[in-house]
Length: 71
Image (cartoon, rainbow, N blue to C red):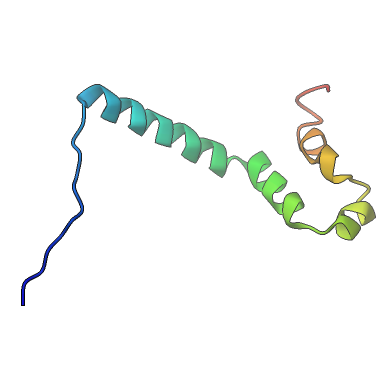
């Protein structure tokens, strides 16, 4: 029995690899930010649960970043 792997690995350009790694680092940093985790949590709540907290769905980001940004 023969096995065939059709997944081709592209080594690409060294610069594109560097920039891709930097981009992944920025995404990881943003996802691990406690404010982004709070936004994800609030987004997962139902409208009724948000209303009980006094938050409208469209105001989640404003609520989470209220001490940093004035919008």
